Amino acid sequence: MIRFTLTCALLACSIAPAFAAGTTAGASASLGGTSASSKTTTPDDKVVLQARDDAASFVASDGRIRGAQLEAALRHLRERTAVAQRASDMQLAQAILTL
Image 1 (cartoon, rainbow, N blue to C red):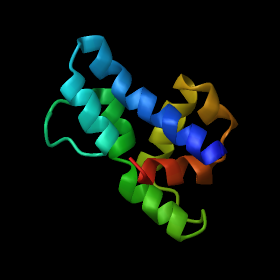
Image 2 (image 1 turned 180 degrees about the vertical axis):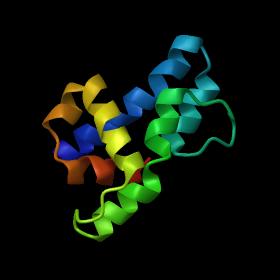
Image 3 (image 1 turned 120 degrees about the vertical axis):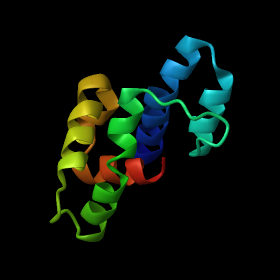
Image 4 (image 1 turned 135 degrees about the vertical axis):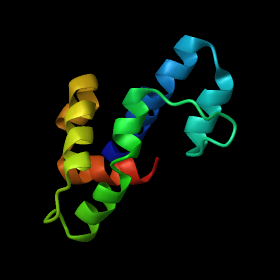
């Protein structure tokens, strides 16, 4: 249940700027995990999306490999959402992989 909630929170973080800008195409692209219909991303999106490879390494190594981009994304998420503050590093890394 917490993973579902965390994934929803991460999606909300990544689509909130699109709604604020009034671009529903960008929002639906973020929900689908692809940017095919919108090439614009915010710096917030980039921090999390660029951490996907590091998140994959972290999950695959059972937390032994911690890349700099993952660390930046974890810090970024925890600064912005209460759900992320309560989640473990592993839960956040797995949620990043679902984006």
